[in-house]
Length: 302
Image (cartoon, rainbow, N blue to C red):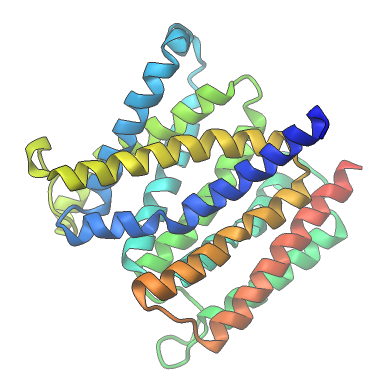
């Protein structure tokens, strides 16, 4: 096997590993929530651990951190909300509905790229927008709950906002060509930490979550769970970043769909959750629209 083939194989592995991590990471967060640690608190601790571990291996690059432009703050804020709201959504919501609402992100990316980055939208992109919206309508419309096809609870609203945030993060990242892979990764991790600190007093005022537990609150098992989450976040971040630089956008989008397969199997066996027929139909349309949107990106790149 040639060197280029080895790199391509490793890139595919990296994307699949990232999809596996994000398809199953909801479960340890739910275990922490069941133990009395809210999603905000567990996110704060796991991302702090991730920063500490990654910081040890990247200590030589800390000097350059103070030379970064202030625009990196926007990446921290948007990416911080994206990751935190995703965690809160998968803790309280039905996994597959949360995942599929999050996978509306190609729709928002198309719109943001068109109006912000001034990128030309291919015909396939417009079709993808229509199919995405119709898929969301099929999933969300329930006349017994609301005459409008809207998310049915706070977890689904969080999932929808996470998908929008993910798209905005991608657009900001594409504009931030001056940032290295390490800088972008640490911006995301620090963003989650900062957003968690911001949300703690807000949640306390609204009486939504318990306050931040002290370090001695956690058992040895809980520390191991949080360390495992942190290591998964670090590994998935770097492997996915490597993968998307070596694999075409269309192929990467197909590989990312492995996350939905993992989530479907895990939610069935670990949480006894099943999808309704409207979820299957709407979800299939959303996935198809995502593939079509990435086909549009590929056409524009030619």
